Length: 502
Image 1 (spheres, helix red, strand yellow):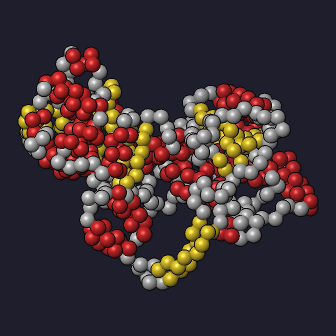
Image 2 (cartoon, rainbow, N blue to C red):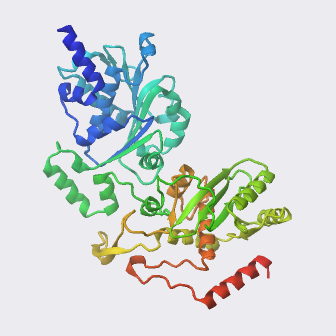
Image 3 (cartoon, one colour):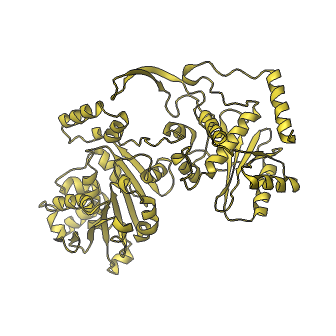
């Protein structure tokens, strides 16, 4: 009998779904099963719609982790090292939701033997028979209640409400993670905040991250009447809130410069971050130059054919100007470009341009010294990201506040058709900056990559003899006409005058 039990327990330890389906009073639904099987990366992000069952599945995961001491090495187990997990949220009450769900599950006859005791003082915690402990804490005061322990599993519930999530992750949570442990960031999306920062990494397939979205319709245990009631209540309100609440969608309420569709269509995980020069290809190079604390970022676009491909990304910080000058020269020579675009905004920009010229490094200085010029530059990038996007259909929409009716296009989805002029490798810094960039960027910490890409895009348009961004075929309109000989001549003459300073 003992041998048979040991075999069964070994099966449970290897298959957490079998363990839960056999012993738990609640069974995980298919979406929850997918989460348990795949959320094994150091940082995992779950963004479900309402009533998906996030509290239940996170409670189940705490139980599985504690019962089988997942992530702990055999040597650590034999040495009797502590095994601890923690449920964290924006408040103690919110953190206790997962904790109380775990307590309810563990009070079932089939699971109760696995628990030694439930305690509520000084903080709620569960002590398992094997010595594992599940804690419950608030993220208040920069996570001071989390500090001081090593955890093999940290779940952060309603992570979208934690305003300083990235700071908390870097200063406390990651430091508290034991070797072999995992962190789960869980919560309904609240716009493109810090939670989206981590979610997008998993979506792009960045090593060490996993992301999953969940819909209210994934939960087969939820009564159909409940779903219909929620859907009907949300149908008359803001459609963005409906997408967020029902489907776990990130939506933009903040006037971001680049839409999620534009970015999803442009970033391609299959593209390498660097592709060397190819004979017969045409390239443009652009640099956003760091001043005191900013970064210097250089981007190279291959514009041989449309869409244009980013083939090189360079980011420098706190290096001598001579090294910056040498890097600009090296990249220009590598890709055989006659001159590089640089951001020459402000008096120092003129000095840098002069210093580069003295060294025989040919550059063209773009000055975005006014808000209008900067907006034009960003608009050029926006248009490039959207160029050629067609409307598949047109629908009539009623404004929920005024009752006014308007017609809106149903546009091609990312990856549908060949719209968009840019194809970008998944450079994390560039993805992060484009995900939060707005035209009012004075409070955004890093914008250098966005500005470099905007400069490179502007250079690419000019290299094709297009001085203004033209959105060919947008929403089914006619394609942009090919430039005629006289137009090309005028563009070239104007360009020569600019370079000579006439």
